[in-house]
Image (cartoon, rainbow, N blue to C red; front, side, top):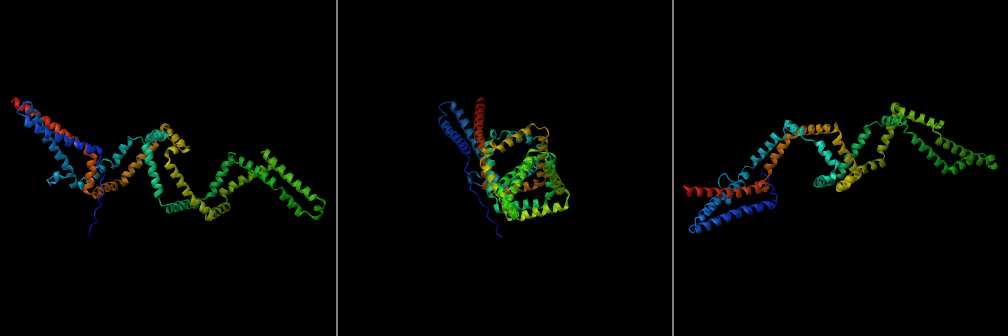
Length: 421
């Protein structure tokens, strides 16, 4: 079976700093060669040119030696297959294994993670950022914003929406809501929070009665006998009924201790008890809940919840600075202040983060190590060479420069000693 060819990724351009330092190091070496030729030509004219020649000659040797050493790390110097050159390309798999082993031994051991996390105040850092998100790293905020937008846009909306809808329906279906409603109603009655509801019902009943006077008059007229209609007493009776109902509703609105209000409160108390303890009432509520869940209108409403939530999250993610300026931003700042001032909350969060990190190292440490090793193994030699050279090449060019100058200084010293002896 023929193994698939490795895909060679396009190589990024060398950083400007690396190119500049290569030019400086190479230019210095060329300059030393020019100075050496000039000093060799002029050495018979004055003794000082001997010192110049010694310096330039030794500088060329030092510069060439360091150029060879630096180049040998990444490739064969001048393309010649000299032994023990192109060290990184030839040993990239071993480098990947060593890097993975280094991560495992120094970062992914649970005891090491626990010790390092012990010194980290995650809650404090989060609190400081939340308390002043606009004063922190805007680059971090913009990066998190772009990541959130890309994740939300890349999700399969149909599939994810179906999963969320199914999870919501299953959760509601498996939850018996009758006792919850009963406890909520009982707590509202105990705290007199039901009184505004009763007042609202009374006012609503008054408005309904006022808007339907004609219906009551028509009903009395239709049900009254012919004698009452002939004498006009049906109209008088309808007026009395309407006035009586108006007076009753007015009294209920003005007097909290009205007998009918007391009866209504007794009915609410009895309803709260039945919702919690009556099997018949609980069965009725469950049947009503299931009927609502099966109703197409309810399903359409549930279907739209995820899309509305997704669009809202997208709007917030696209405008992180506007987000932190609104109500959510105020809540974030309050949470940040709490994290910094609450002496019990911060240790709890730090302990949770520490345990989560230790658990991740325990559960996924080996997988992370294998991922690093396999990733490096999968890179082609050119890729890893280019990435390492771009990362540390600028500092390596300083080695060439230092080698040129140090070599020249040693050559100058040796020339001076030779003359002294």
